Image (cartoon, rainbow, N blue to C red; front, side, top):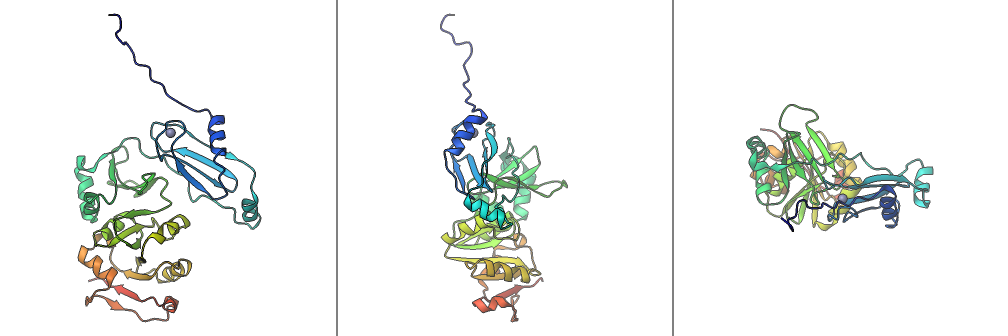
Length: 297
Ligand SMILES: [Zn+2]
């Protein structure tokens, strides 16, 4: 049986910490900068991230089979030092959780499909506007960021928290191909918005327009925000901080539960009797914004 191959040799490239650090240092990141590139160990494209905050380098490979990650505290450069002395060192927003190792198509799990239907997100998935998968180990439906480096997972059972964040979702979740963007709080609402022709839903994954999200908004020709009807003071703050927000809409309904028609009515303020104008002393008006309300019933 000469010539038969009895075992294949698996060559697994791993880099020791020192090699990783040398690689990361060679990228010469400036304070607050973040880079995504091919992993120096596993070679997978766009899976390796490195960033620098308050003089600390943090790197991570998001490939499930790769163990490359680490951090290094270097000296603060001038920018970091200025921020530090000024009492506001630059910081990361949160620790990142690993992406789940095993996911499957939502088509393999009926409750996942049912959930997507109830929150008006199935169309966005079928149109290919967003990657959505099911994670059996967590029993969660995962909505991915466009770069697929992060996801938010909605539990299909009673477990808490209802939503879990995986990887890096700091840039929000953009859903759709429209030139007009609508900022919303969660991923299913963004999917719901993407049904409207010409619109892209952007899930803030909270109620703040973070710096990384702000950076992604200039590619849209207009930008609106839909908030809960109780959030008018929040809206004023957000529009002050974000000059790119052209209009604000309030809704008493959950955006992800509204029909396509109702979402369009809300965003475009079409002549629907259920839409009520609010004239108020709200400072938002100073910039020429008009606030509409979409009451229940
Ligand atoms: Zn890797």
